[in-house]
Image (cartoon, rainbow, N blue to C red; front, top):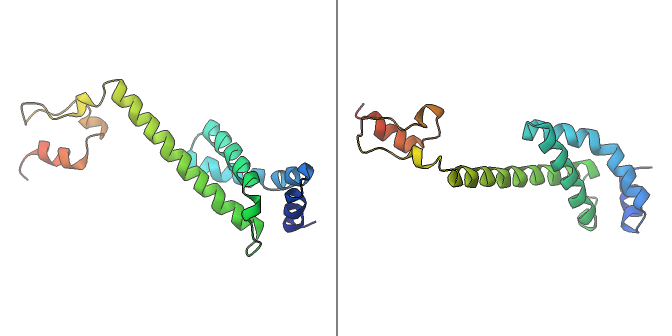
Length: 133
């Protein structure tokens, strides 16, 4: 049976049909997520979120392209959104932990902020702190 036929069955409420789609595509989707996230746990979480989203959006699959193409686009979107969310979360953690304060320029323009060596100082500050070229 083709993916399109499984999609039609899943739309009619056949949970086994969606499970079949999941089994056909999960390995490829996980590998993609792993390449994008770079961490096993994130890849597993993103894969799960992608299939939940795919299930909810099955009615949006029009069959104009292969199901795998539609799923790929959805998966990449999920990964990018989740990576942005994780980055915002890490950014808030750094702020709450006070590490951003150490990245601010010091009163003496010749001194280097503590985090400059970690390249977390925006390029603008790095150029200012370096002085005239």
